[in-house]
Each structure stands twice: as structure tokens, then as C-alpha cells.
Image 1 (cartoon, rainbow, N blue to C red):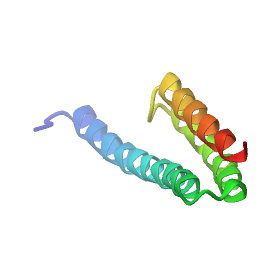
Image 2 (image 1 turned 120 degrees about the vertical axis):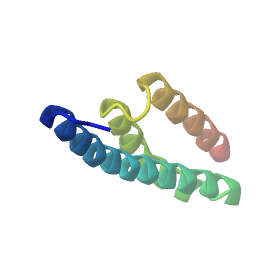
Image 3 (image 1 turned 135 degrees about the vertical axis):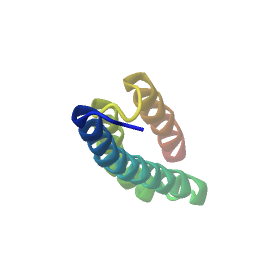
Length: 88
């Protein structure tokens, strides 16, 4: 258990940050799932729109340290390839 004032403050800061990170991670996953659902339905237009909405969230999550930047880039790349395959 935290005893010093600085350790207690650190615990409070970590709790706040954890809530924010959980929220961002959840939002990111929701948008990725929307892209995957659009791909599964075969709707090219909806998939493109969902990918355009999801990409900034993925990259912002990488910027904020929620996911590694290579992980975010990989997810965007793989989703893009799948969306592009629908159009062909």
C-alpha cells in the first residue's frame, strides 16, 4: 500500500489514466469491429467508410501509448487490404 504522499498521488494519477486508456482502447476496438462487420457483410461502401473512421482512432491510440505504433500500422494495413479486396 502507498504510504508517502507522492506514492498516494501516483496511485490517483494511475487510476485516472487507466480509465482514459480503457475508454480509448474500447472505442478503438469498437471501430475496428465495425470495419470487420462491414467486410463480412460484403458491403464495400460501408467498409470504406468504417475504415476511414477507424484509422485515425488506431493511430491516435498508438500516439497515446495504448497500442504500439507498429501494431496500429499493422491493423490498418491488414484492414485496408481486406477492404480493397472487396472492391475487386
